[in-house]
Length: 334
Image 1 (cartoon, rainbow, N blue to C red):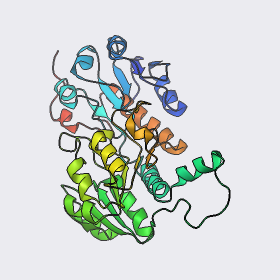
Image 2 (cartoon, helix red, strand yellow; image 1 turned 90 degrees about the vertical axis):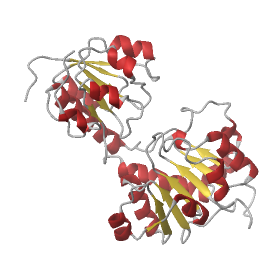
Image 3 (cartoon, rainbow, N blue to C red; image 1 turned 90 degrees about the horizontal axis):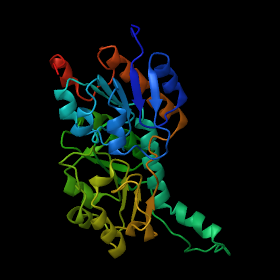
Image 4 (cartoon, rainbow, N blue to C red; image 1 turned 180 degrees about the vertical axis):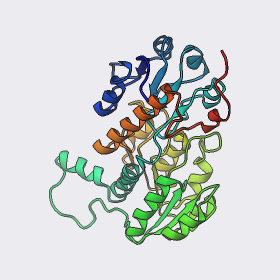
């Protein structure tokens, strides 16, 4: 179904060209040109005449921004998570919100396991050691790390990505544990995963990998109490959302030896300020939210995001909708 006219679409950051080509074929497309995201005031100005809005996780799409867009028909998020969007307000307005589930599962699981391996075997510390000119000879106690093969991996959040990480752990002959408030028992059995409560998982795991969405219930779910339950040799990996972990408690845990190391793809705040105390710790590895950053994955995300946006502009059901309840009633009259 072709659009009868070319609606105005605002894209809050440059995305892979394949997605933009799809949009430009049918829409008048404006792309925010800067590396940094638009301010809230700039967002409100840009969405004033928009019918379609393509957003990133760093864009605060709250009720105020949505209210500034009286013509808005669809929001399409270039991500799986939508915690930056006021879903309730979008639904109240009858605006479907698209997202990109599934497509980034394997890439994010790869990155989680890469962080696990890098932290366990102190890869970044080793590279820094060489670049600093400290490598003089082979030494039997130089940069000793932790074994991954045969260790116990605890997965917090057993959805698509958590299950993909579990499969990687099984491939390393790890004992794999999982916690989820709504556990998929069939998936756990098929992969070979033991389902435990959170406290037991934290106590028994050599590696704890976080894969939960950010909600009121998961905000700072890993705090002082939880970190003190972990082994002093344990390693924490977070590729979920930064605020799932209390950063002050994590700093103390790493500084005082409650746990051995952490490897983070996400932080609170994000990006992490250069004066943040975590950056001063050798046992904390931080990368800049690159979980889905493979060429093929980011391109496919652009395609899905464009497909969601175009479907919303055509008033068709979005292929991947984060608020399907919006279809239970018609769009409200404004």
